Length: 270
Image 1: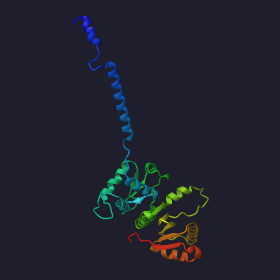
Image 2 (image 1 turned 90 degrees about the horizontal axis):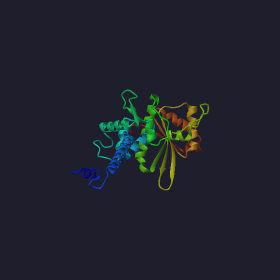
Image 3 (image 1 turned 120 degrees about the vertical axis):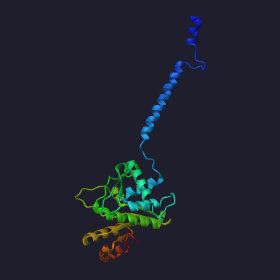
Image 4 (image 1 turned 135 degrees about the vertical axis):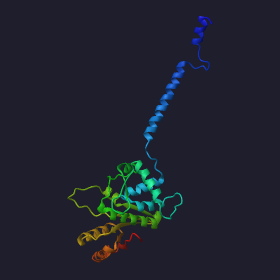
């Protein structure tokens, strides 16, 4: 081949009609797309995709401050899913796997807080943010565990009994709505929850109180008066140790206010 022919062959475009500069452009574009995909993957990496069950249960936990593992088994068993080996309660292994999944995602914290009792689970700061709950982070205190557990038991019992007609506003939600006041200002007592029962024609608003240890008579009288004047109905769930003291306090209450009060025995095993 002559020198002229070689030069023509070198300068001739490829057979597919694309020049070398077109190949370079395509290569750069592909590289940019790959880098963008990698960046997107890195942004998503480690972020757990919440199922409807996750959202329901994690929100419930956040509203109630914390939940004990045995109650969590009962809550999870009420959600749609596969058949249960034991009716009404999700197995320990399955529940533990789910809690571990939440922990890996940074949504919850869990700890054994009392001897010979199941561990507790509560939302982390990340978990509260993911569930859109505008609450301050909270870690259960040993002194509050029995009361937290009892309030959770009452809420679960009410929700199971009344079903979709019942909606619950937790004490944590009520406290968040009220906001904080200076320490020298004593704010009105907040109930452990507010239950709204919607019968389809009318909605009934009920303050819920769980009393495990009896308060001083003056303090109890103040609380009873405040609740009975602020809410159209008040339901008290009393332990055997507090039932008689509450009955005496109700007798001393104004008859008009006493009419809105209802007293129920609290027994977690019932």
